[in-house]
Image (cartoon, rainbow, N blue to C red; front, side, top):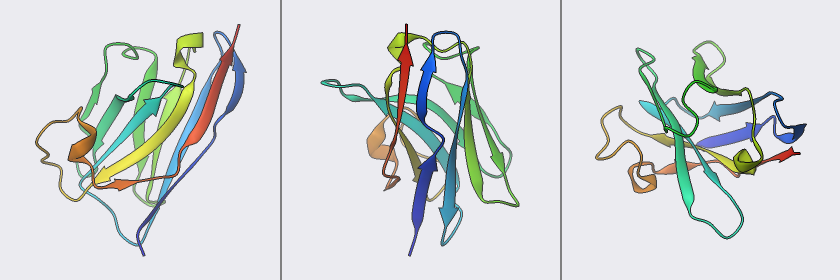
Length: 124
């Protein structure tokens, strides 16, 4: 059974850092992504990475502050979040697509596998 399991969320002060992990069991995928959903808002794209060559792409709102990466040996994808802001508060979801080629990188419908989410709260 394929599973994506997120961890690493928590409460952090403005300007702080957190690292989220997404552990994959059952198989590896061609593309991974992180999305986030704030209360009362739609689930939004954060970052994406191709498993084979590590090509990355970020939402403008996190560019320069967040870094998506992978550990091939551990079948794990990470999201390093630095210089956190209150507007980064959300539930963060790991997502995966079977192949690296998807219709739209930033569209949640391009990803068929999802984790359960992990809460990130940035306090001011």
